[in-house]
Amino acid sequence: MAIEKRMYKIGDELAPLTKHMTQEAINHFESSGGAKGPSQFTDVETARSTLGTKGTVASGRMSLTFTTELLRRFFGAEIYNRGGTVDMRFLRPVRPGDSVTFSGKITGMSKEANGCRVTVEVTGTNQKGDTTAVGGGSCLVPSGYLPAEE
Amino acid sequence: MSHAEGPDHRKLLNWDELVIGEQLPTLDYVLTQEMMDEFRLGVMDPEAAFPTISQKVDVRPYHLVYRDDGSVNARCSFHFYNPPVAGKRIVVHAWIADKYARRGKNYIVTEAVSVDEDGRLLDRVITHELKQPSEVGKKWQ
Image (tube, rainbow over all chains, first blue to last red; front, top):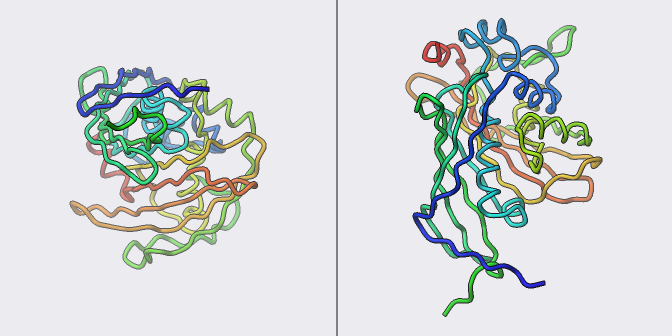
């Protein structure tokens, strides 16, 4: 089966991804990892005593997973899931009721032994316009997915 | 992170004495379809391929050894090699990768690699945790 060739260039923008956070989603995320007891993510009182916040916050790993989805949609699961990276710093909390939009653009491309590493910078922004997370990721795109060199 | 009931024999974290490179207990678990389904509900993505993200397999081994005042995830990165398969046993090797102080706050960095029962390398995770969670709570009101 022929491989569909992909074209990348620095400055290309990724289609933004918006997620609407709910306490139910946070509870599912924590429970899926085996965390069944109260935590700063699932219990208001624990969040108050541990963080000093008025309510629960979402784990930074949820924003990390949303960034992963953004990158996987852009590169394609067949290559991102086998050569992708993601690296995010969490600047502000994401709370139940927040909507966070993740956007990104290509900032670098470099040849490696088994393909081309395409690097993307990513920003997460909430409904107020505040930046909640910054960082990015990359994907090793095998040479077979790229146009033949001249 | 909560701990099982009964006497808590874990060490109280002494950040100054924490040794970079310390190996943490090996973790193993079976990834079930239910875990995968619930993870996908949580992240609202039916194609999410790495439910290992919510397993927090780098900080869980840390909490088997240490107790502390809690933490806030400041930075996290993943390297993806192969999507895990439901029903397979996953073995995790974790260690203390780094520690640093910035603006008067102490951070520790844990790292872990997951491999399944067939020897497939799944992913690698690196997490930076701030060990004074109330410090960020002051800003997050």
